[in-house]
Image 1: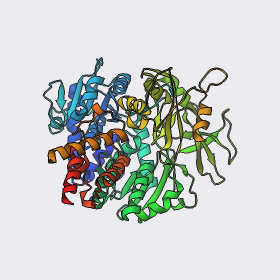
Image 2: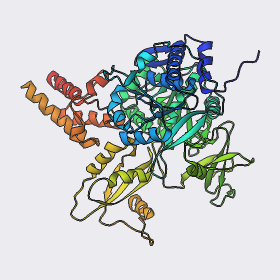
Image 3: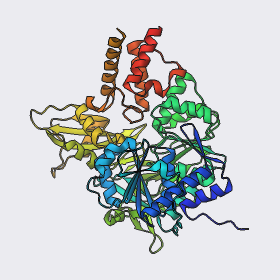
Image 4: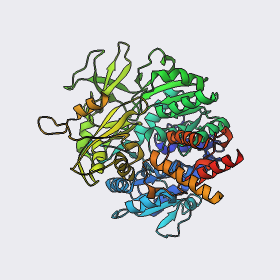
Amino acid sequence: MISRPQRLLGEALEFSFKNHPLKIAAIFKGEEFTYSNLNESAVNLATHLINAGITKGDRVAVYMNNSWQCIVAIYGITLAGGVFLVVNPQTKANKLNFILNDCGAKVIVSESILINDLSQALEGLNEIIEVILSGTKQSDEKYLDFDEIILNKGNHVDLPKIIPNDLAALIYTSGSTGFPKGVMMTHQSMVFTSWSLIEYLRLTEEERIMLVLPLAFDYGLYQLIMSVTIGGTLIIEHSFNFPPTIFRQIEQLKPTVFPGVPSIYALMIATHKKTGITFDCIQKITNTAAALPAEFISDLKKIFPNALIFKMYGLTECKRVCYLEPELVDLKPNSVGKAIPGTEVFLLSQDGNPVPTGESGILHVRGPHVMAGYWNNESLSKEMLKSGLIPGEQILCAHDLFKLDDEGFLYFQGRNDDIIKTRGEKVSPIEVENTIYKLSGIKEVAVIGIPDILLGESIVAFVTTYDQVQISEKEIQRQCMTNLEPFMIPKKIVLLAEMPKSSNGKIDKKELKQLITN
Amino acid sequence: MIMEEILQIQERVKQFIIDTSYVSEDQVSKDTLIFAQGIMDSMGFITIIEFIEENFSITAADNELLESNFESINAISNFILRKTHLN
């Protein structure tokens, strides 16, 4: 008998539930949830959303911390035919308002701990039909109770017919204009990508994946999608902010896969050197966001003596570009490998010609994982998506510079635009600059990224002030903390008497870069 | 006496949190969950441990590295007080 192939994101849950309803799908705060629990809760939420008026293609925002509730929300929305967008819970009111307005979200699923920013963000939004909150029961009747909704079957409805070309998710990422933009991903592309990742990571249904990365970050989101697709177990942690909790959870719950980023691994290495801590249960560790420094490898092998180490590289617009086979980690210490299964990459010069081996070129990506474009933003979509080899096909121009060696392995060289990439998140310098300009007394601001071994790039802000104005570095960082997500706060503020300018009067960021790196 | 001591410890811990994070005085209270709310991250955790070691001569044992001991200014201060009175 030929089994039905998976075409839609939600079908992964359906299949895993049918195959092993009583298997543990998720562990959160010591509580275990089976695939049956996840399916029932997600169907209950989907039923509620459909009864509330959500139809195929409507956007539903999830503004939550990592939790059981958050994963129920994601699958509930997708089963209802909605397009989910997971917004980082550290997003402040102004930006949240922009995102909700930009995508025309109809329903928001959030939690009571985030009510301050959420209620401010809701001002002036008229398209929202419901706000559903998890957590302590709200006395305010304008919010619905998430925890009650997912327990209730509600009036039976037929789930909508979705096809693979329908949109599944919007993933917001920083844009060069200073405003975030929503990367459109179809069911087809997300299902394809999840299977490509599962294939090269050699995942099986025995895996227990530990999630410490935010679900709003595509690297975190795909841990959930992969885990549900293989019928594995996802161990959901709030964050890596309090490392001893994570170390204890690893010892108790024995995950087999640990996805991390360099700053997490650096802290683990420091702890290992102090206490000798090791995690024998982990069989695979993965790294993306910033290049894993080659000198980390020997320490990581001591901490994870039984683990394969996967070095990877990607960008939100296609999720993942390439990975290095773990067996080559010592042979190709500076490479991020080759294109993920079912895709291809090539390097082109500025004028669109192929570059010879060993020379730097702009990365282009071809495959079903490439985004459908940016939501509501055709001009920016055109900057990233170019005509492909086949008429009508779109390929992704990544604006990242790479080199290929004679065996076809990729080496990251730098970025081709102003966007800063720090902790795997894109940061628009304009967004940070505009925030600093709001402080009184600021004359000029220039924000740049400089290479950082742990973060990929570290954000530096150069500031000049009007005469007599005294402003401290801390004040500027606090202004950023109040208005931006923590990863966008400049690590360093440099107060200058005069801003260097190019001949046409523009701030000379190249000179600033030289100034700071010297 | 103890009350006075705890207030002093709380003040020093609060000042440390303000100095090492990006929050201003009015954004953090004694009960604010500093890790859950992202005011301190994993690097912040390391600096807190160093801060209490250097300033209060306290070493936290492995089984004391619980979030409940470090989740807020209040929790950290109580932990310091408990440990200094044990010594």
